[in-house]
Length: 214
Ligand SMILES: C[S@@+](CC[C@H](N)C(=O)[O-])C[C@H]1O[C@@H](n2cnc3c(N)ncnc32)[C@H](O)[C@@H]1O
Image (tube, rainbow, N blue to C red; front, top):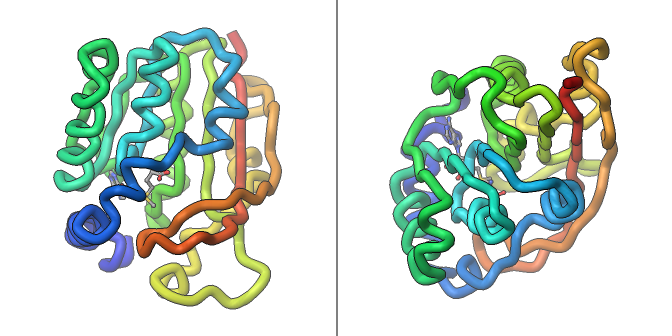
């Protein structure tokens, strides 16, 4: 993976983000694509791969999911855990925070009713990661992959350093065996968000939701 998206990068990024924008990070809501795509699912076991601030894991737990939330950054997991603890044991008892590198960490096969990953930048091993995440979905379960859709214009900042972080939902869908998966959503969507500097931005996202055949 490009050096700028390694563990050191993410540790520093989360330290700085919480130092400078802790209130904004704690106040943010769950990813709207997650809410739209998983809001009607019956709760079961969920994997949030690359959970970062943990807001999505907390939202899933608040809906009754038993969540495994994985991230490479100790700093992110510490803040995520603290955020969850404020909400009480009903939430904390439903989340296992796991420090692991997704480029090698392998979840149990066919284990989770929902596997969800949002904006994890592993360009060098992305296809292999998505294969492992897909294999972790239980029969009848849901795979939700959200990422940065390729921009219309030249990107600036850290994303410009690694154009390979971008992908389309169609590309991800093409990697799923049609005999084993029903593609429910494979599209580009926009949403308002706050970046790491607290600035309001519009994101253009690739959204893939697929159901593993029972
Ligand atoms: C852009 S942030 C997205 C965080 C969160 N999923 C969200 O939607 O806001 C990417 C997250 O993936 C984590 N990450 C990056 N590479 C990773 C790896 N190899 N293994 C585990 N987590 C990783 C980072 O620490 C960071 O929290």
